[in-house]
Image (cartoon, rainbow, N blue to C red; front, side, top):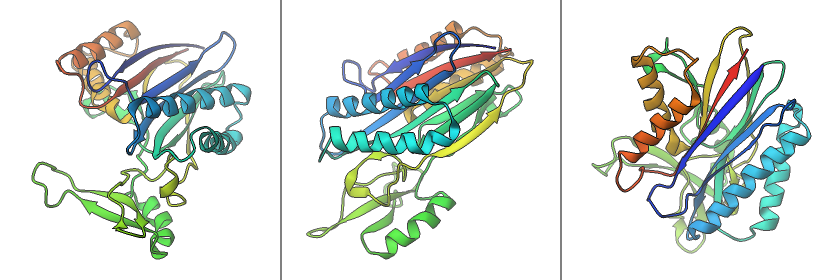
Length: 283
């Protein structure tokens, strides 16, 4: 088995600091380990959020390098959250994150919180992209059940956004915390699992969802691990591959260039910070 990877990253406005981060560990004879983190901040400077995101990405990969046992994944997330609270105290920011391991048994294990995403190139699927993760949002049924108890205490509330704003096509549920002086906070989250964001806890949790995928022994597989802002780019690239009737033997250089070309179509930069790790698992 062999694994190749390529990274595409861009800030949402040219010349600014991206609040995304990534880390990859790929040493000969070792498993492929990668993480993508999407940082968010309230009243925090972009470089502070960027530092938080990079810290989380690096810590996750470092922990997984030490012990790739999937049973240890929740423990590693606990330790990263503890480290975040120690290193970044009292700063109103946090992050979604996803990390994965591919070992010699050709099993892909993913642990994620929030809305970082994993896609597989699948020419047989609609638009050539199979999304392998679901975002942890207040509207997701299992998250609704988990949040019920917290909302009943009166300290948290899920509030619907977007109904009265014509420019927003899709209403979404967002998580708020109670501020004693003014009622429910103006600050809100569209995801319900992640690191940091102390005032949203314990309704916000860093407990990861863990997914396992067995990879075929005799075929090439292409994946993309990305931040929320990278999803549109990944879908565009995989759709173009499908239209060109290319299989998974396409080079990562071509994938990366297609993604960069799409990003460059926006003179001021992409709509959101974009981070994508394309990787190919070969027989």
